[in-house]
Length: 238
Length: 238
Image (cartoon, rainbow over all chains, first blue to last red):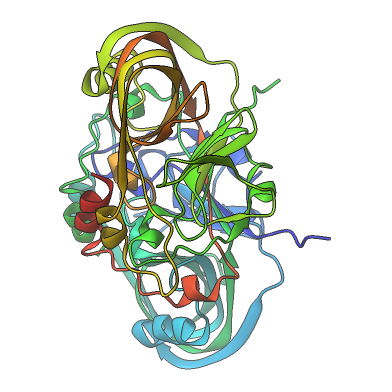
């Protein structure tokens, strides 16, 4: 019998956010049909989403953490069903060392994979973007208005994805990590961290399923510029 | 009840071919589980594949057209199950006019879609790449060694895909078209054509399923350069 290959599902593309396509186009209920772990954002770019064991937490720019309703819609999210994974212990790893350690341990640089770290962090620095109202500005303007949070000695979960450079624009090339502390009171899009000690798990995907908002007229009509896209993403995603 | 959304499946990426990853990594039998129409190539880059109603034809650089065995493996192919599609009549359309006519008629520029044209062609110009032996050269070297074919007044099927610019490298950005005549004796990767009169059908996809050769060691080990990739693809795919 053939082993079922692991799959990651993405709704929307990072590239769509660049010109300001922030309207939610897929309900949380539909998204959760494709995964129980993941990351994303909410309609209007209302913060940073992290999906843990089926619960979609939203870290807003005010610092508030709330659970998304099943009926709320997201413009962009990446999810997968967590399966049995390779796990190893990590200690005293800053962001760069962490990212290098994973790719040194696994030959996955040309694949999409999920990475999770649970444990104690010496420090975590995050950001959350602020909710926008239509007409939406471009992503670069939103990133300039983000709130930055920082916390020392915190236990929690770091969760995200790695995408090969070839897929820059569809996804964040390299690592794209979100965080939520165990108290569910602090988190966001990860800018920096140092893992004191924790369990790191990695899951490679044979398939990435990219889903588009086929019925969304503003998406269909938008002029998505490939030429300047990569520079704008670099500025916005830092 | 929710309508089943259309999906396109791709094994391998165009970007993988650039450094010379030409080994077949998915059997034709497995590929056909994901579609009955499509395009691709064969192991060693042995020509241009076109899948019509479940039959995978391979146009080789010698001009020979043969049917791929179920056990043969492909490094790169894109397939879908043809469903009920929008169809319109086209007349006196050269390549550029054809490509523009489809995008003028349908708001699909930010989506993946399949396009088919069956009918009478005033002329069709194709190319087929020549089979390579390991160690494989880069794609640019192979494209330089291609055979070009040309035929006037031919009936047949033009089939291929459109991919948004954002996905350049994963797929061919814009249109990627193959051709096979009704006599199954002439075809290949389409360089130019003029449709005299025929039926054009278009099918947009909500989902693109990108599948990787997860077990292929040479794929995992390869350094796939994103920086020079687009320029090399432009040279090779022209």
